[in-house]
Structure formats: structure tokens, C-alpha cells
Image 1: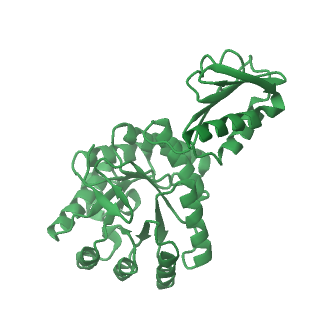
Image 2: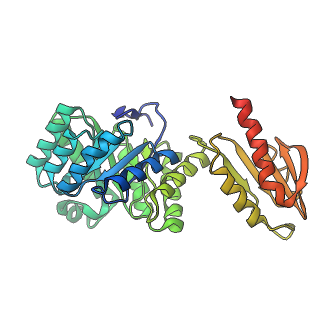
Image 3: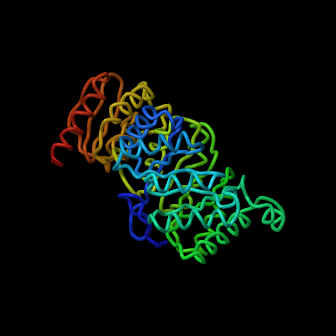
Length: 352
């Protein structure tokens, strides 16, 4: 679904631009060294927009320094409750701010934030969460529901537009996957503004990735979503890795290799879990967007994985290395990861 273009630092979202990957620092923002180190790790992992929490004036002061240290990274200032912090973050060089207008202290204060954003040409994400809905909407809709979140978002969009401000991104997140999907589908039919998609408070890595993959994946498959964040109780670098895997699985964007492997069965006569783990580790340093296959027998070998750029069919004591279904050579079982890496390096060299 084509949406309005919005520029966030060096990144433009909406329109025909690719879905952008976001994450958020988990450090105390006033710990400048730790925050910068984490921002750099996120960027190296493929994060394209980094959100930073600014809950206090101490954090705002640190944000000013962080902005100088990482001038090329699109930074979003996350603000709640204090409209003056939002205004100060805009003036400190935030590329975008994220506020929930419902908890910023009333329309007059939201209006002040809008004016500052307008003067500095900084976009605002109107972030509506199921946990912070306005009471009148909860009462009207008989509880916290997708309809209430969408009405809240549209109501605030109308307010922003009445103030002459349309540099807007919207999100309507919930910890409920069905509610999230329903809310975004409804919202997408009612607005042309770019949407930031995610399942909030998704949980620890394992369950959080599953919930996010279902929620974000369903929406992206519908063509809904201009930026995404996988919200995990984990190292935020894992959020970025998961986000890219969702994009790769849907064949929307590629970054680095896609690893495919068979689920194992009674035909498997090698320790495939060990081999896959070793291959997965070596692939962390590979940037080329290729498909790598690790198969546990001749049935799932070069035949079923013939479209893989490079792969292996593992057999007791050895592995058959293949490229695009064509067998290249045979190696000892313990040499499989290194042999795959050698073939990948050949592909990388051909790309230069």
C-alpha cells in the first residue's frame, strides 16, 4: 500500500522506499559510552533507524552528545509525559520524535510540540498503544480494542492536520497479536501516512520472535508497514536480526545469507544440529544475500535444495558440497563448515 513519504535523517520511508528496520537502545541514555557502543552494534547488525529513550533532562543532555558522536545514524527520541523534553529533543537534533499524544499533558502541550517540529522540520510518530488509550475511547468501545486504538490514532492525526502538520508516522501496537493485526488493517484503510509496525511487549526472544513474526509478517504480506521493530526482552541486536529474517522470509528485502536446513528425520545419520550451528556461526560474518542449504541426507540434498547458491548434503563421515544443485566436491564431515565458507568466498569474489 503506497503511503506518504517521510524523511527520517538520511532514511526516507513510505512511497516506494523499502521497509526500514528499527530498534531501540536498552542502555541508560545518560551512559553515553554504553549507548553509543550499542547504537554502533545495532547499525552493524543492519538497524537503519535507532530509537533512544529520553525520560529525564540528564538523558537529554547526553542525547546532545550522542547526536554529535553518531551524526549519520537516524535517531528517534522517545518521549513520554514531558512535552518540554520533546521540544528540547527536537532542538537537540533528533531526526524524529515518538510521542503518545494522549499522555503528553493535553492538547495545548501537544500543540507546542507540533510547532517545534514544524519549525525544525522533524517528523513525529503518533504512537498509540493498547496500554495507554484515552479513557473515553475505552468506555465508548467497551474496553481496549483495535477499534479504540484506531480511533485514537485518527483523532490525533486530525488534530495534527488541523495544526498544519502532516510529517507524520503512525503506530497502533498491542501485546495481542490478533488485536495488532486487526488495528493495523483498519488503520491502513483509513490513512495514507506511513505505518511503523510491531507487536509491543512481545516477550523474551523465543516467544517474542514467534509473536512478532506472525504479527509483523501477516501485515507485511498484506503490503502494510513502512518500518518495523521486533520488540524483545533481549539484546536489541537480536531484534534487528529477527526483523531481517522476517523480511527475508517474505522475500521483501535481503541482507546477508538465508540459511535453510532440513528438520531431520530417521534418514539423518549425522549430527545435523551441530553442523547447522557451526554453519550458522560462520554465516554471521557474511554480507552477501545468498541462500545456503544444509541438508541431512541425499533425499533433501542437491535435489530439493537445487535453488540454493551453495549447500551441503551431509552423510556419515562426509559432506557433498553443491552449488545450484550441481555437486562440486566431497569433504570430510568435520570440514563441512569451512568448505561452505570457501565456496561462499568464491561467490563473494565473483560479485566484486
